[in-house]
Amino acid sequence: MQTHLAPEFAGTADGAEAEAILRKCVHCGFCTATCPTYQLLGDELDGPRGRIYLIKQVLEGEAPTRKTQVHLDRCLTCRNCETTCPSGVQYGHLVDIGRKIVDSKVPRPLGETALRWALKEGLPSPLFGPAMKAGQLVRGLLPQSLKNKVPVAPPPGMWPTRSHARQVLVLAGCVQPSMAPNINTATARVLDAAGIQTVVAPNAGCCGAVKFHLNDQDGGKAQMRANIDAWWPHVDAGVEAIVMNASGCGVTVKEYGHLLRDDPVYADKARRISALTQDLSELLPELVAALKGKLKVPAGQFAFHPPCTLQHGQQLRGGVEQHLGALGFKVRTAMNEAHLCCGSAGTYSVLNPDMAQTLRDRKLGHLNQLAPETIVSANIGCITHLQSGTATPVRHWVEVLDQALVR
Image 1 (cartoon, rainbow, N blue to C red):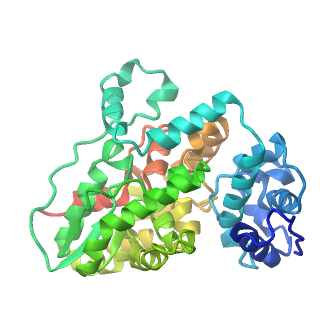
Image 2 (image 1 turned 120 degrees about the vertical axis):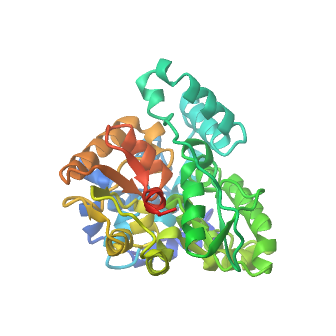
């Protein structure tokens, strides 16, 4: 696709990247078949091909409108279209550029601006933990819409105390320690059983995705730099990997090298961080070998929901169910639409609750066909969102693995 950039974008980094991405696009429309919002709304402008047209028009100098902004907002950034695209169009990067430009030109309604500010400043804040605890204390009094966002957190259990020669860093995250603290401690216990010590850098916080995807890209990049500073002494000391047990964080940290590529101070370090980053599921082949004979595997059926950030953002598909199956777990993915988003998508379920709930219920309908005793996933957002629509327990797969360890 040929693009003639308007003078204000010609010669800029965003303009050059967008032009390179658009050049790959042949407008075949394969992406519309796997776009969740297009499936629901049937509007070309609510699919990747239509949004690409909108972004192209803006880059060529056409003034965006509130309608342009809404169509871009409705995108989940699930990146399913990237998996489908035969031309390798990096739509996720393009829509970030498009949103940044449109938001600079189109003012938002006051209430919407306030909500987005509260999300981007509140979720990564140190105050989020105390606020979540207060919400859990009065959860029974909350309206259902708020109750859905305040999960009942199981006790986290003990962090292992043994030291091992092999060490990996893990990002505690901004909301996971408060919403589901057992995920981090379960990760540490499972890795400990495999002879790997889990280390948390106390000054590392939000991966930067929340602010970045709410179009505070400078704020998001500042959080990325802070994490690199927190991790770098451990990298210098020879830590073998930075392990992500939230696939949403994983896809962002794996892109630090790209997002900070023009930073003269952090570019090289960011590339190194991205190269060291692994999703926890990438350790599963090693965990299978180390944990065989150390597990008492439950007999029940598990249904696995692969987050978009795992299967599309990180292009990791099939590993969790395959390797848990090798350990004796009965794990299946949905027979229909396993590739589609559940509607969580970071802050999407707050900003677009009706669309998110429709996608959630559609996803749960397919998962329930498997009659699972437990639904497992790999991202705190998906887990919380799915749990809000079902009485079936929804957990991180590492919690299930940890529970099966014979102690």
